Image (tube, rainbow, N blue to C red):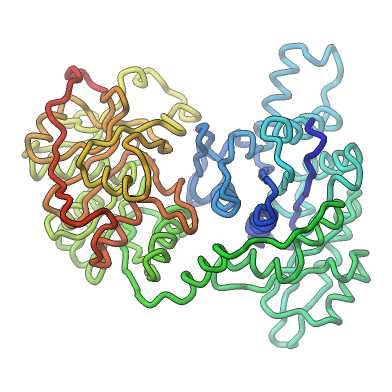
Amino acid sequence: MSQSTKFVFVTGGVVSSLGKGIVAASLGRLLRSRGYSVSIIKFDPYINVDPGTMSPFQHGEVFVTNDGAETDLDLGHYERFIDTNLTSLNNITSGRIYSNVINKERRGDYLGATVQTIPHITDEIKNAIKEVANCLAPQFLICEIGGTIGDIEGLPFVEAVRQFRYDVGTKNACFIHVTLVPYLKAAGEVKTKPSQHSVNMLRNVGIQPDILVCRSEVELEETHRRKLAQFTNVDPESVIQCVDLDSIYEVPLAMEKEGLAHRVLEKLNVDSPEPDLKSWKALVQSLKNPSKTVNIALAGKYTGLSDAYLSVIESLKHAAAQNDARVNIHWVDTETCATLADAQAKLAGVDGVVVPGGFGNRGIEGKINVIQYAREHNLPFLGLCLGMQCAVIEFARHVAQLNGAHSGEFEDTAPHLVIDLMDHQKSISDLGGTMRLGQYPCHLTKGSLTEKLYAAEGHSDVVMERHRHRYEFNNDYRQMLIDAGLIISGTSPDRKLVEVVELPQHKYFIGCQFHPEFLSRPGKSHPLFQGLIRAAMGLPQTFEEGQQVTTSEVASPVSSTKP
Ligand code: GLN
């Protein structure tokens, strides 16, 4: 194992949804701002091997890494905060650990031993931590344990990190416990007791936290800090408050003020230089005090569930902040857009519309109605993955006159499957891990709006983007749709797969088969979101004015077989 890596373990107490992930990501930002390299692991104590098959209703969005791992949404926060790409090694579930151990047992690797939680499961967890330290060699590896102290399923992880700290020594690993300090309105008091109990529970399993991060609605007074310190055995200066804030991007600044990174570095015997937070402060400033507003409809099926579309929402915020605007999200439930008139009513007052990714039939016709309205009324539109596929279906039905055009995902007997499975996928029956996942190159068509948007942000005409889908644009219909006016503005480098489509003579109409939302970072908004927001705000695009967008992909060189 890389000798120089220092480890920080983050646990949570009292209740779930405390924002442990944001605290871990903020610490990562503060260490990065001091010039240190950082990686972060999320341990998820559920039995699913990865969250790929979990409903966004229950679990929020599935975040996809460059190497194609389907991961917990916290990895999105981590990447956005530490501005570092993570990998499949950075999200480890109980399911993954157990399946590794069971595979080894079946292979006979344990040489007849009785396979047990301790040491076999705990060793597998420790090895997973060492693997990240070895492969990615960060100076700091932050490990967040999902769930709350006291959960039965989290125990093997807690025991593994307890042993890990013993193995590497106290100067190489420290523990942060994120806890809730509730404010009782009726009594007008904050209560420290739940946190005391939570730390007791942690000590019962052999871990004394070094730092306590106290989530609270109100500012803690000195007496509360001292009481917490006294009853938890944490130094008073390591009892850190984390009061509710308007934006998650403010948390690193608040944590810096409280000295979180400084405390961690002190515990780990590492220098704590002044952090460079200039650009982060500027970002927070532009998020908090914009002078304009832009209204964007998010037309999907998990309306109001912001976690289900977390990266899309963050990408819209990044792009709006870069244009001195606040984005108001209008949730449009596409199940309520059964007719074009319904879609029109739901889109009243919006400046632009995003149709995000998704799976399953529910709300599909509503999405198509929303897209038809946006296309016919020059309303800026960005379609992401399923949103792009629906845009192709809409165009095929209403412009290319292919009646009954559809996707094989929803009606495989439809007369025109303009979106369909790739041939080699047709025999696959498992749902887990069978998609086109992760980073693939996309070749942008010279002169297209898409190419110009990317070029304006300094990209070449081959860009890497992240995917998560099974279905593809069907090449049998490629020439027909081009002839009807659709522009293919991005393809795989061999031109066989259509990755981006756009429409000419429209303020902004782009659909992409990939997920640009996974690559947007604060202060470095993604060109396709930036383009949408600027079009929605009535601003010219950032590429040189007068550069006409003229192109249409010429007759494709591919054969007419399905993708
Ligand atoms: N359901 C579509 C497919 O599998 C789109 C997936 C998505 O939007 N992520 O191709």
